[in-house]
Image (cartoon, rainbow, N blue to C red; front, side, top):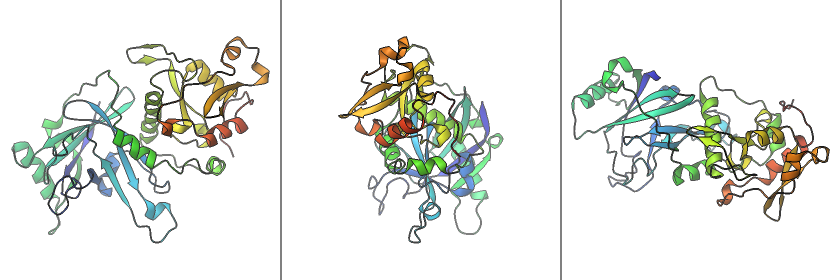
Length: 346
């Protein structure tokens, strides 16, 4: 289903890595104006550098997970010297391989789709050099919004004004691409989330009013399954057919306790083991940098639990993806051996 609004963006030099008129001197991003930010997932003013991965469908129809970040130190910290307060959508090499796809004054549009509980943003590029009728129509829409001498580079408007953007998209069954740049940016913005999990568990968490919760949940699932190479961390197996799978992304510190949607707080588990882990039938302990299953004494005689007790689980090759010791400690203290439905802490 295509959403009725579209986002129009005129590119300028600073975004595209130009410095003093020279290209490729810095990274590339799109600055998202606050007046148009509602088109993209809601990000919190209070969670430092709140971020989400969005599915960009590029011009070659590949799906690229891209970082959308609210650099919000002005509102998320008490430091009066901090003044960052801007939304950025980062452009990766997978979208712009040679870092020359977008030029100043080119116009980019995004149309939004919801397909089988996933949100996709289709990117279209209209170049200033071609300056065709479609470019002229989009450029006129931006100019018509201009007040005074200051140019308008961002516009959120109805798609019925630009019927040439109304089209179906085909989503491939292939896995989405997780660029190294996206992963690096995501990890960079999650470095502090494990510092005080007890405090986090007691805090009231902002609940977004739009589809952000769905997008973040899908992000967590997809990136965790990517980190564990599409196999259960304990059995090393999975049951898959087409887009169907018995694998789930398990939070170590539960979502109900405000557990972060960060890779070191997740592992891929088959559905039955995910259920058992959430109920506290077993926990995971870090022993000499290995991750070992520890089954609770009360259920050690269960046939399935007996098979996995003491088993070493899969350890992602990238150390940044491995389970965080603080998350494991939290699960052992608050979930292990409870044999109950997880509920929020009060």
